[in-house]
Image (spheres, rainbow, N blue to C red):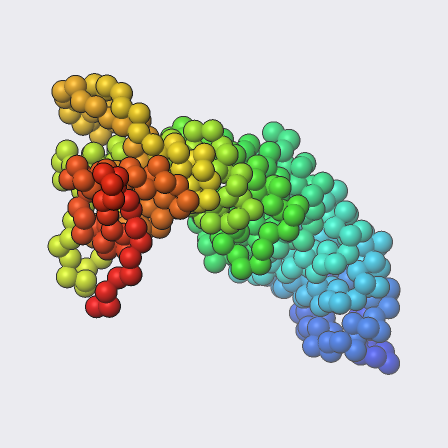
Length: 509
């Protein structure tokens, strides 16, 4: 036991040098003070430190670990626990600092077994069932040491993974101290690589990335958890799919926001990353197609925070961003059913807004000073944006907008099941153009909807005479307000009994 041991310090040529024989209670505070002095020496000591120093620190940690374990297990106090914990913290600070940009020290410490000892000591500290500040400090410093010994050192990363995965990460990711969680994320990020990310797919290991995502959701300021997801987890489409199935709707929103952050980065995706994100696009488009009508629940004020609907909104945001990238656009344009789903969802939300006053009802009553705080604000704008993107220079998708009149039974609208009831009418199959033209008015619930509608119509009619004729016919029948077309820079002309859509310059205001 520490209480039965004694020790001393000697000053060497390059700073404080430890010679360890034994350690007793009365010298604990002296050791804490002396090791703190070593930490202050800094770079000179780090470069000139001998293996014997690390060996002595290892012995102190091992004996301190045994003493702490004994004290908490037997509920006895043979030593000053606080001072002993401070000693552990100072030892880890010394080791942590000695690792900085020093591969030699990293190798020496690993070969001495300091990684395994540290992992064991972390488990001892976790099992202490107390949250005194001295224990938390020792706990934090131990994780910082593991992060530093792993930095840029594959052998140390292998050793930590072998000793710590998955138990230590599960222990620390769920700890009540935010700094411990953050430092654990740092260690995990440093140790992860493509092979280890695939290990997370094992059902017994999947809990680790699930906890990381919970950290992202609850502690967004923890940058390491964000980097784990964006730089590692998102590189494995199978893992993302497995995680998505296990996540709550709130956590799915968090994951989708992290995907959005990744694809919105200024740096373009590498070829390898592009292949991965095309698989993400397939999966997320399928999720949107499956759950898109959940957004209709938001027509009810009592369901304004429906979590499934919030996921649908985020899925649409991600798809809009993905279709803004040329590399992913062509792939998504070819996905079966995505364009049809976007048009159908726009139609359902548009009709829902006309059936009753709700978030999908076009309104223009704001003074410019107010803000509408509702999760579905901008949803129709984004649908039109997605439709416009999917039709960009894509003749096949443009032509899907041409109407084929079919009879459909429509009744009164029910936000719960997304059905419409009423009389027998004719509805155009994929009649996207008239639908978009009907969403060109300024709408406080859908900022920039007019601009996105202009963009979509432009993409639908570019080098497509059939769609241009369709718009002209819609205007002649009075289904589209000519002022709307003029606001888009378009004009209908009649030549030899044929309607022609022409582009015109807008008059300066």
